[in-house]
Image 1 (spheres, helix red, strand yellow):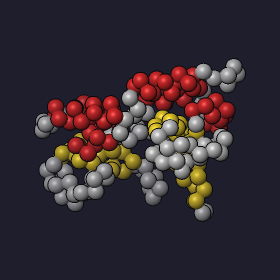
Image 2: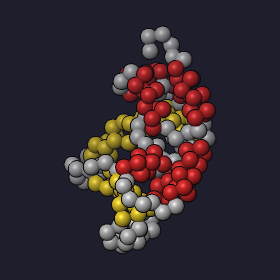
Image 3: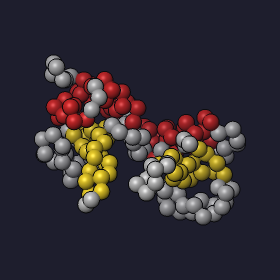
Length: 188
């Protein structure tokens, strides 16, 4: 299915970013999403301007495939560039690096709180909620990643490649975190 841009067929869908209705005929971005209620993915709809600020990578890829005219494309490109520069965009998937928005998360390895505004590495993990199994984010201090590699799965190189692909930090900050992770002990 993939992510798509199309004109809204009716005025019933709401933007998953701003929660406002997407008017009939207005361009919208559909992001493929897997839900716990179905085996097949569905589309979560966003205004293209909302997507430029929160989902710039997904929007850029969908714009490249969209054959039609896009009003104010230059404004969308500028909003996407600003979101990437500020690091305010939503991560594309796991693993990713971001700054902790609160001080409530604990590191999966050392069980210590991750301080607000400090870097953290998010990895996908299985969670048991009642009788249900689901997947969600687990967080690590960058210094604790090497000790937790066997639980993350894959190689260090795969992890670093995923961090580069999915993180929305400004490039200089991301390079600093990745350099810290790449300085792993021998045998890790």
